Amino acid sequence: MKKIFVRNNGFGDNIWTEPIVRHFLSEGEEVLIFTPFDCIFEQYPSSRLYLNCHEKIFPLNEHPIDLRFQEKPKMH
Image (cartoon, rainbow, N blue to C red; front, side, top):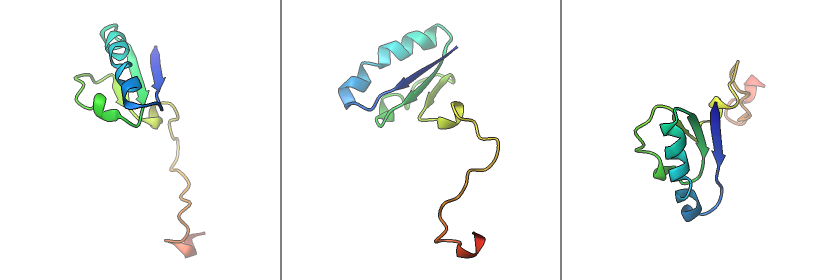
């Protein structure tokens, strides 16, 4: 089962999620974290921890629509 954490609060609030994440990883869970302070978890030694990885929740079956029409005006 996946555990998803979304933390948009301050740096200290994000630090408090670290023991929770460590617990779920020790239980063999897959953990997804969305936070502006990913530096807290960047060096985590786990392949089951995903930082700001939207593709794990919303997998793309095709390429996303490119809305930068100013760069390629003849494309649209």
